[in-house]
Length: 498
Image (cartoon, rainbow, N blue to C red; front, side):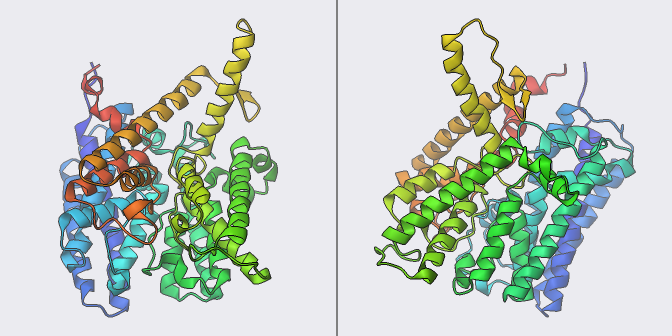
């Protein structure tokens, strides 16, 4: 009989609160730099988070430094919830958001990198609050749990169980035999890319504040912007949008491959099955979108286009590529309202909501690798029908996959589709129309942000009923943590002491 080690779970919750408070301090500093009165309120929120977290750590400091899988799942799920509940404090203390439901929605959307917002006028928000919104994205992008894993050895705690529960996709590649070194390398790459994008956006014409915020949102595949029009605010500056396109592509790629690229091991990238299909999907759908926009619709309106000159062709392909990447990588930035293009493109974008980025990236969704396994398993079933006695393994990256991995992928896909159907049904029961209900469920579960119907790229989630907002928060959480991590806690056998 093995009992849960509750003390270490509570201890790590305190640790995460301290982390949260530390990032709030950075937001308070930004607010102070811009001489905002809200700086003291954000500072107070940071003080509460650090004080409570520190006290919890002190009271549970005498704990057994050992984790098993059950504790790993609990820590990841409860950690995200604790971060979200604590993350509401800057909004509430400053009065930037007065409804707790709205504050929690905005925070959960931030940490899960969904990018759905309830704020109707972003540009009147204090800069300290806008920076906090972007920081919640950035923290959640790589995962606050991975950050914690990097320092847990200092506390005498191993972190493999946490990484296994947090890492996206069916498997977690390791850059180094020690999981903590893996986490550190991932974070160094993450920070480095963020800094490079910030600099490039500044050179391209963004102000420093906007550049930093959009870099934080891009690398996390989040989508929070400092402008009401999102990236469409810079539609007259193609360079800015092409830079964001590049970094959305990078953020949707397995960060392990970014490490190999930095080390000059390009053959590992070119031979990676998921990367090749990810790139093929991006290029194929972008070209298709660009061609259809060029010949059938103005990229910024729903009107039928006239024959375009070269500059207009660039605009069509830029907006097509931008929105394809924003949806596939689940970043959710907006350069144009894709629901106002052709009906074919609307259906195409609906399908792209199910695709997702690469495993090991900050993107949400089903992930490209799972689609590859599903398709190859389907093809293999045809072969098995013709040759029932043959041994026909499914291969990925040149190696035969274990049947357990294939079953896991099949189970995940079925559970994902059931979660989508139930999610949309609940939203419809709360009074949303068909298009809005399926859009809201799919966007929340896939951590995309903008959706369809009343939740289109030019609208937001403020009109949802209160229960609808809490339900979407739940969908965001299970989508971000790959379903099993959260839903397993709802099963009775998880809590049996065996």
